[in-house]
Length: 104
Image (cartoon, rainbow, N blue to C red; front, side, top):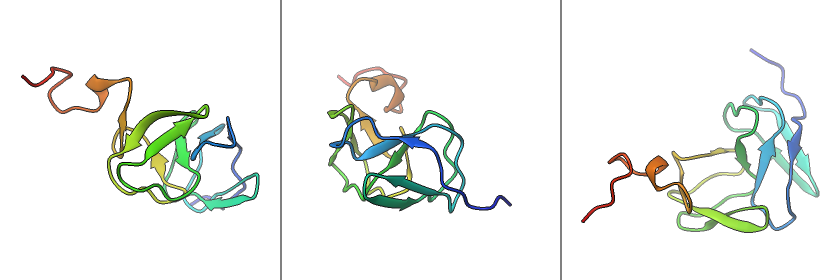
């Protein structure tokens, strides 16, 4: 088991509700960005998104100060944000169960 540390993450814009992991993170690691203090809720690998604050189902996921998708369920601060809990605005095939085929 690893000892919690302060994780190195990148906030791309102050409007974003996610940060980007600059290294692999583990449960219990701390993230400090601007005035936010976040505890990582699950293992997140380099380059993946972590919720900066609680995000409600249906709310936009903001990265680069732009909506990149929306939460498909409630997401807690410190949780990994990826295709299991967000619907992408750009990658239909990565968010559907039918392999990207649009329903008729």
